[in-house]
Image (cartoon, protein in one colour):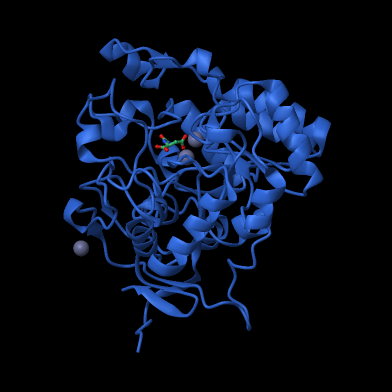
Length: 380
Ligand code: NCD
Ligand code: ZN
Ligand code: ZN
Ligand code: ZN
């Protein structure tokens, strides 16, 4: 018996951008630990990025992930395939075979496709198969050696900064290529005012573009970084307060379609290498809903319905998934949330194999207490 008195009953959350690290980086996370971390966060469907080792560029690797998820995972896992073989930007993967194997789209997340010709070819091929291209937007020549955003924090600590244009140049390029090819083009982790402006403009012109934003880019700016602690290092980096305002407005006016976590576990040892050397990325699953509930719903800025919609029905709609709503006959993906009791983010309660989050010690409300995936209780 599950007691839901004074609890919110919502459709299971959907996260279209996560890194499960298996195969190849199991010291950071694996499918068993990553899906349990997702379940603790109230997520019942997650789409995993292909920057594993091997990368998800063959049918064999897609099948490996599907098998592992079926036997060891506790929530639904949908893989993305790579755009280019080994994410090296040199040769397209076999899109048709990957589609047949069950990928939901193609991406070189973590790297980005640097060549415009390669991106255009990828979009044309994806369009012919009715599949989306998911883009990590980053011009490599503008970001080399820069661990944080260009701005106040970088200046104060004498660090090279990642400029906003490194993201927006790719967004601008890719909406034009999307227009030319007719593909569904989805922009990963939007973090700048310029990107929001370009996506808004593209949508006004009827270009098939959709976009996502992460909780950390909605609640933190570079001014919040307390010091040289790599648990505040992620890609894209925390931007200026002006950018934070712009992505909030972008989500509110529908320019940005959905919330994703970009759950990116890295080991403590890796993060202890320091701001300059540590890998980019922070955990996402377990704090996403409480963070946004506390920051935007409790303050009256958003309705609860708006937040839930951007984490359930909206991503399902954009990617054509039969989940994200609770109707008669729906698959029983259900998240039950305690909206009343505050609880601190405690390191020892983190379910993920990694602990790299800037939110330890934050007192948040809106904790998922029971998660049901395909009718089975997977977290309580
Ligand atoms: C991601 C990772 O660690 O794989 N890191 C990150 O900071 N977001 C890659 C990515 O999403 O670009
Ligand atoms: Zn990325
Ligand atoms: Zn990512
Ligand atoms: Zn606790």
